[in-house]
Length: 447
Ligand SMILES: Cc1cc2nc3c(=O)[nH]c(=O)nc-3n(C[C@H](O)[C@H](O)[C@H](O)COP(=O)(O)OP(=O)(O)OC[C@H]3O[C@@H](n4cnc5c(N)ncnc54)[C@H](O)[C@@H]3O)c2cc1C
Image (cartoon, rainbow, N blue to C red):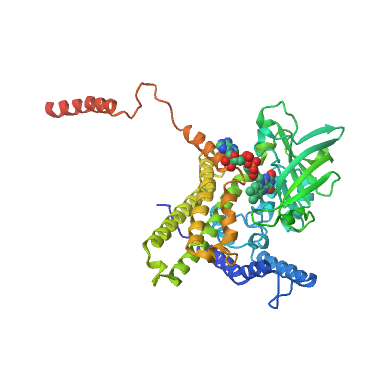
């Protein structure tokens, strides 16, 4: 009997350590940065921000000393090589924070880009881009989606060879961290006449390269649009970028020419599992808040916790969360066991990607609703959490695209019936059973 929901004591100690630093250091840091003011209402000045940056570096050093810096990485890249299940258990805790991934050196989009360069990069690319990413000296972005289309078949941004250089032209949009990144990984069509999966290639482009123009730094729902016109570094956001005659050397090609779309999957598969487990962390926090509120607030003289419709909502959230968590952990366990992104595993990854959006939506909505006006205010973290719900259904491929893929993968395990009626049509099964039992009865009587 190999199924075991415990982790070994040494790893439990790591989990406890992470939970402690999250509770004692990172959550207060999140809250301090949310307000951006001192207790007496003063906006933080440059010195204060420098102090915060130094504090973050100190926390990062503590994480390094604990052997957990870049915990998603294998030992060949200087990480602990924990495997997916353990990664999930740590991501579940970090999902409860905003700054956690930065402090642990596993923030998106750098993590996926590290995987890409580690798998596909040349020795020179690893030295110039991967090493500084791993050590936290450089930041990166992934520039694939275009303003007119998120679907690879529609992409227009192109790269053509001009002598010994590639010339990149086109527009990209929603390049997360694009304005702050030191370099961008750009997907560009290199041969529009090839079959879809061989049409595009990836390039590493330094952000300072001439012709890389940030049009706007787009932010999420709820952020005032004036922020989008702040296109300088250090602003977060998802850049709208024009690549206008951007020249890069032939050596900027990442992986094989024409292997861009296939290569991009390297980046997304593991990341989707980590995102899903961070969603578990977010939903756990939302449910904890809902439970505390239900026990603290009265309506018409009755605690919310005693009202049956509130109880039903809490129970629904609990069940959804537990089922989702188990599914994510099962997927992680399968990846560890098989060691490759097989069809079976891609099925599970698509499933949890789809569920993450739905579970986030349902649990966070119920928590907000239970909090009444407080839930609608910006004085709890529920607003930030709520923003993550619709995002989950869009980023890394929309829910609909994943549902279509999942259905296709599922259907490969089935065959059409070659008869007028299906194989499970009862009259047919009964006839077969009658034949079988006629013999059984005959043999019995003959004995
Ligand atoms: C928070 C966030 C961060 C992101 N970061 C990055 C990044 O760093 N780099 C990057 O390149 N991109 C990034 N993106 C963009 C993301 O990858 C795209 O938004 C996503 O691929 C969907 O593309 P789209 O926005 O063009 O939507 P569309 O493809 O236009 O889809 C719109 C809607 O159409 C419907 N639809 C689409 N396809 C189908 C289908 N096959 N069947 C049925 N219905 C369908 C769905 O309802 C979908 O919601 C990010 C997005 C978000 C929200």
